[in-house]
Length: 443
Image (cartoon, rainbow, N blue to C red; front, side, top):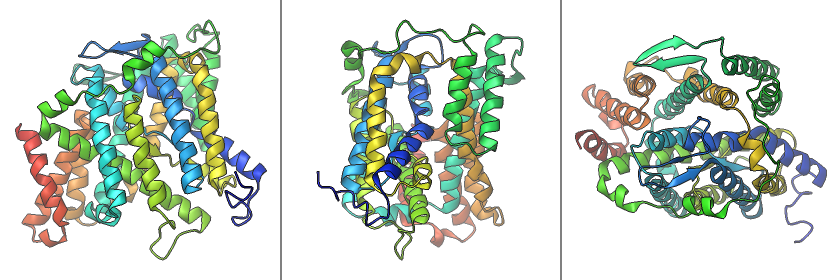
């Protein structure tokens, strides 16, 4: 590799600074390795879950595959796009899809088939240069509302799985604070809150580590038999290329809605991260975009396709990459460092799997907090613009059904504008989108 491959001098950086930035980015997003297995296989003490097709999905395999694909795709971002961006399993949609698998509503392979379709569409959109159409199609309020609704949903899962709150029979009650696990959750909650308040980098990860260590004398954290482990190829075989196209084709309307939800979530997560980085670095062009923006978009899309083949939910560019940029990262070298650190974690699955459920649940609450914080950016000055977003948030929050909530929100937004004479402000593609959304509820 040539010495100037990453153009360090051109971007006013050096090897030491890129190394530090890559490590910083990894620390701020390594919590995904602890959360992803529980997102798919549940927060219970079991080591995995058996889906409706009788396929056993182990937490160990999920963690190993998450580390593998996060490392490889992040390295690809560094080498191909030469940008300090890191990718992994996006938070939010993983818990939505995992919840469906855990409830026995769909198979694990059905989820992977959906993600493959979403990734392929993302690749086509990027290659065909249709990025601007997608950006303009959804109103700003709807984009914000989607992230907010997912944030509420993710926080709900956190409160439920930590025991801080009890959701039974449609009622909400305070958790049993006499339980040791709930007490550990409260301690972890307080530690993470203080770290976040003082803007400590990697606050969520540090909170997870602190809670896990404190849980040892409390009898909650169980020390593993070994700190390292060789991946079980049999268990990994259950999650690799596990596509269930038969189930997907059995209910096309539902599949179309879910593919739309997954695609838009991935697309706008990437768009938001790229916009933030372009502002931080001053690299934005006259349109406010990064030069050669199609490169990181393509890597992200490839990541989702590769992720589906390896048992991972949507692979997306993490907004935590901006922390690495703040630490001085300016080239793909920092992404390369982050990717290598992810790959090293493949052999340390026992360490991540020993983290108690009540501790990972707290991390989930704070991830949800960060997602729902965008709520204040919704414009409530005009009811015609606020009705759709409010419908989306309310239905998602109170039903726990993200797909239905987003579908109703889009239909409500189009409906209110159409009947109030603002139909021309709706992008034509939105009218086309309403057809499968209506079929989703009818079928």
